[in-house]
Image (cartoon, rainbow, N blue to C red; front, side):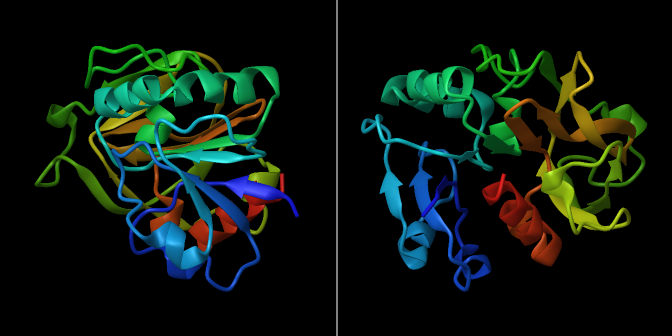
Length: 219
């Protein structure tokens, strides 16, 4: 069976409980993986135990930029992920801060990112946001898809997804495949060769989010 390595967030195991994914969860200790992995019957690779062969991976969805990068560095997972993603061209999906660490760096922190996608992470300009509280951007919002891709199969153009963030990736190339409005139009989904990312949380986005994860597992 194909192995799909993903990060599960606490309380989302039920989304996968009736699916036949073979899951390896890699935890950076900055997210909320909790016992979701055990609930799904998968195996968990903790920081400090790199080296497992991974076919696909999803970076974590919760945690500050520098904290996430530091865990990847200290555990040796940064080097392992670079080999898998850059050398072996393993498909990888970053969620929320998992997407953000794929860039060069962030206004939120001082550490450099993984550098897999050209661009930096910016903070929302609160002066351009009318609703209160202005940050974080939290709740359901619509995505304007700019192209079609296998990972989007079965997803309606008018589908809302769940967001919770105060920063967003600003790619310097054409890797953005979806944008969302929140004071400004920002990149909410991107694809660059074998690197995929969503600023929204598919694991919190009901059936549409589950469909994206299923599509990713079948790449």
